[in-house]
Length: 289
Image (cartoon, rainbow, N blue to C red; front, side):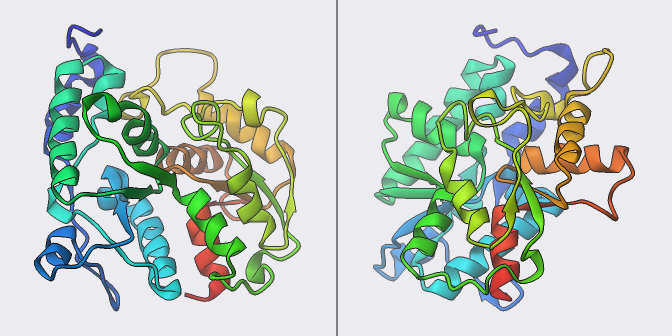
């Protein structure tokens, strides 16, 4: 796999991975500055918001990007995005076995970020989070990398995010699905749960959670191909565990997990009873923005 040979089933996505760049220009009344624009005005943002491929192009996850941007704007965080200068981190390429493509994409991103002297990166994608935090340093990219669940927890603890005691979620049963690259790979377990608890809800855990959490079925570049034949798809297994808790909503902190859990709920015909939300969406909803 390290020789750069793609499995045939996902070879066709190579061209997509090569050309993925993110561009966030205007979302409702929110004008998101780019690093280039801020540099032109001799300004340096506190954080670079790494949007990621899903946050830029996936229609469902664009709502998460918008929610997070609204929160950052509301609390006055100085941030910027790379816009068209942001390319895929290379995570899918490396997981699929194309090391050459990964390094090509990673080095290009590192050159851009180092050019802007980026120090802190915040992202809502655990795959981007893991890659930039743990794999970019070997190629010269050294940054403080924070997942948005950790950043949201910080904002709540500092009193910058004023919650309304749960709002639409108050008193409801919520279960959290641990993303593999957030949980087991980077041991971020408490931050997302603290964010959920701040909404004054009842947090109910699945039988497999934290260090024993079950993958949603999309990791390792599996997101870009159909599953192999078997008795049951992984996301269906995980959805059944979530439904067994009696939760009225499933909280996630990953674009892939959001897709897989949503598909699982649809498979069980439970869309009217159980919703799937990203943490940022829940906080934004409670803030009324």
